[in-house]
Image (cartoon, rainbow, N blue to C red; front, side, top):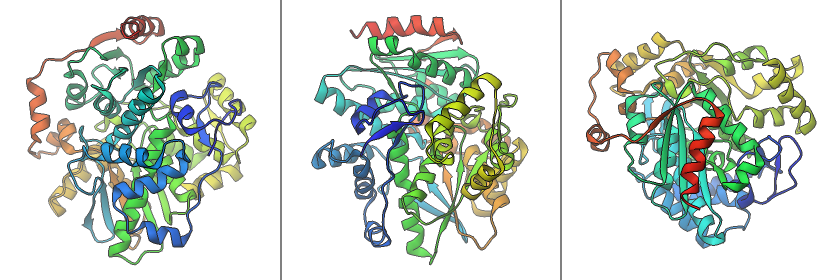
Length: 466
């Protein structure tokens, strides 16, 4: 298995080099040269596997022998041994034909743990095997930061810096990141939005001299290993529902801002999983909904919402989908991304828009609708949705018929977003691990959203490890 850039200027590289490169050196995103295919017979045999066994079957296709079988199995076992549920990502039936895939049983109660426990252990493995220094730089709209820190803290030879938008994440998300008292962890709260942080991360990674000098590694979903780990739970969810219902295909409704989680579902479908609709659920920051409905990808005005992890205008994984939409023509991708940089928007033609709408459905959930959906489902089913999962459920209701079987990805535990839950006049009991956070001191620096200031902080933090 070899990996190439969406922009065509990275020679075929292996899996470990792909993990270490993160953002492609030509500014594009790395994708597998071929997408592995699973036959119906293979899917049938995979349906009988545990989550960890299934993860090995899928991930090994992309690692392609670069990590010995026993060591890769060990990495997977270690990554999912930290989860509170024996099934790792259990499927819960909420209503007839309507399920949720609970992705919040990891250490930080968010779906990002599924990928970042694996990526953290993978980085640790690579550091030990190769002696390569690992300095991780990432931006978060809330959940990635805590999951990334939890995935790498205490691992020898690894330092991490996470940017988050000051005052624009939930209190629990902030505490999960900033109560970690560890000299290898730096939390920078930027005076700006997540999009500002994401832009600065990409610009810093594009400075190849700086990237090389400080051995920068990516933890955001620009790193293909993140997407790879997330493919697994689409297969797992399908197999669990298929044991209960006779289904030809299964819809997935996915709360998404950065397009990574749903892109993993797109790859699962390309690999042969019988996926019906892939529903893009967004909030008022609905650039993806507008693209899917109208064929125009153009950021709007940033809005703070009840679902802050999706408060994103520029989706960093969108370029990966664009690559496949444009029939793997990297020069066309480069032209469109250059156009986006100069003009601020991308417009696809009618034929391409038909393909987009064959690949995805979309619905943008407004604030009150998000809260009403939480209240409705709690009253009717006694199941408490977090506000992001609520957007997924609302999108499912708007885009599917009642006879279609759909799984909504439950991306976070509701305790992480109590501000929104309280607005629904619902009292919830916090898990003890979250309760304890409120007693701990915080460690963070508030900084301007400017590259120069961020670079100075990085130089100081990462130089101390040299």
